[in-house]
Length: 291
Image 1 (cartoon, one colour):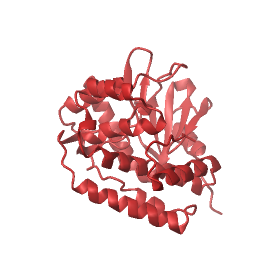
Image 2 (tube, one colour):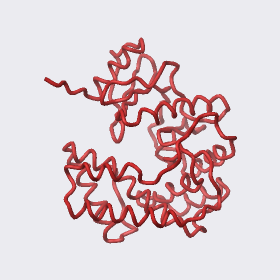
Image 3 (tube, one colour):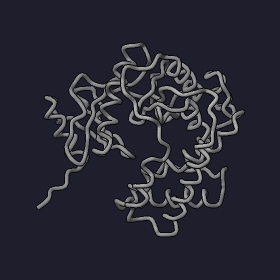
Image 4 (cartoon, rainbow, N blue to C red):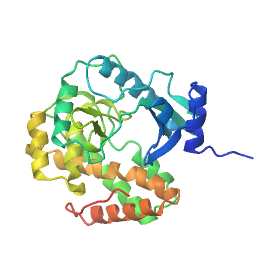
């Protein structure tokens, strides 16, 4: 009989293997990754699909270098990691308690990205950025998506990849966070830091800017985008390639919802259907939820 390992079971086994007590483990949230708080150790435990193992190892090495060089990245715990319990890979991070009254201003992310992009190349081998690389397999293996939607997603993906291949990037190439948007920032009412480094790569610097502008779907205002651009020192809205990167980000965000819908998450399935409907109707003003 095959035993199914849950994210929580993997987190507990990884804690024990690392010499940490798991009695205080508590669930925080789940989206693409299951996240737990190990209260007694003041650590965050992240449980990711095993396919991300190499990216996780890279993220741990990169953030250790960033912190050592004074960049405010989330800091990995001082234990060997990632720890693998198939089908998961587990990493441990310092816990940063968050205020109850919201996230830092959007513009502060512009400060972080300007500082990140100004650093010398890290002594860590980063993968090349590949837009929508995982979406194809996610769509093709999905048990939730119908044939019509599956076909449309693949056609839209190829359309965006063709457009991306023709872009010229005025900010050039270098190390990027890969998933930089205000939701991946943490703060303590004064200082701000950047987390979730699983998609760090070498690629066009515009990738790290475009995600914030895709946030108009979640209520981001023109004033917030103005402040972000001012703090970074470049307004990506003046570049003709922004709609392509926003379109890529739109599709990229569907991946975790597809996987959750495949596992019977009805709230994720409803949000997924709504997002796809608005994309097919070319409704760029539709507001999306988080589910």
